[in-house]
Amino acid sequence: MNAVLKALVRGAKSWKTTTVAVLVAVVALANALIAAWDSDPSTAADWNVVVTAIMAAVGLFLAKDSDQDDEKVFVDGGRS
Image (cartoon, rainbow, N blue to C red; front, side, top):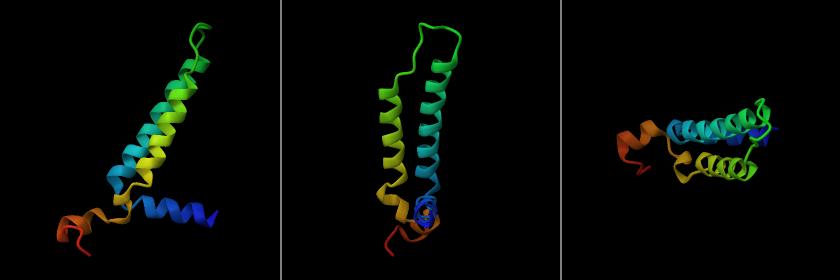
C-alpha cells in the first residue's frame, strides 16, 4: 500500500498530466457504466475502449514530466 501512495504522490507533482489522467479514466468508466446500466437493452458498454482509455490514463499519470514540479519547470526551465 505504501508503494501505491508513493506513486500517487510522485505522479501528482505535475498537476496538469495528473488531472488529464484522472479525467480520462473517469470519463471512460462513466460512459461504460451509463451504457451498462441504462434501461435500453440494445446498448452495451464497449470494454475495449474502457481498457484502452485506462491504459492511456496510466501512461499520462506515469509520464516523464511527472518527475518535474510545474513551478520548478516554469522558474528554471527544468534544468535542475
